[in-house]
Image (tube, rainbow, N blue to C red; front, side, top):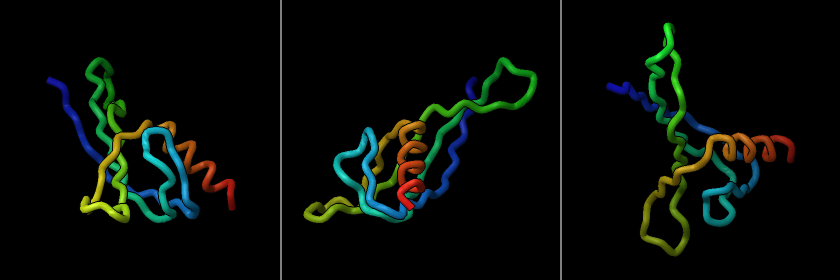
Length: 88
C-alpha cells in the first residue's frame, strides 16, 4: 500500500510570468501550490518523492470560473521563480 501526503504552500511572483503548462501570461501575486508526494517504501528511512504539483490560478476576466487549478512541472515552477527573482 502506497502512502501519499499533500502539502500546501505559497509562492510569490513580483512580476507577471509565463510557465510551461499554463495558458498565457499570469499576473504578479501570491499563488497557492499543492504538492503530492509518495513515501518510498524501499528505503530504511522515510523519504518522499514528488508525484504531482499544482498551482491555483485566480479568476481571469471574462470567465465565470472562480479559480482554476493547473498541473505544472515542479522544475518549470522553480525556473519561473528564478526568472522572477533575477528580474529584480
